[in-house]
Image (tube, rainbow, N blue to C red):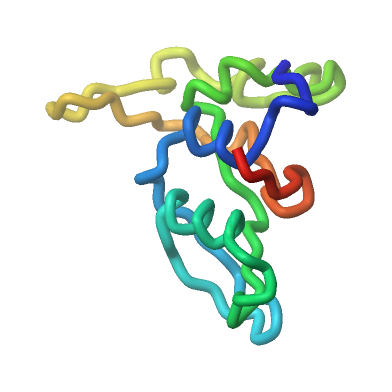
Length: 123
């Protein structure tokens, strides 16, 4: 598990990748839009007084990233995880004739809520 005192929004960006497209919510209007994680990190670490709107990332799925390898879900969650316990192994990843394997299973196994979990840092 990452140490909370050393884990920051920059850590998330480094482990997931700044080019990852995420969905953000504009808090006042509750409208959503997409932006790169890099754009969100720049917004998040910027001057709070200069923000024209308040953006929130409700959840960022990271199970198939280097961050997913560093975070262990609670024992209770693992005990009832249908994907790990019952999903057919042969359907976990299927070659789709490209360079990447396409996962054929529910991928939302690990997620993070950035503004609530991580304090802004200047590192």
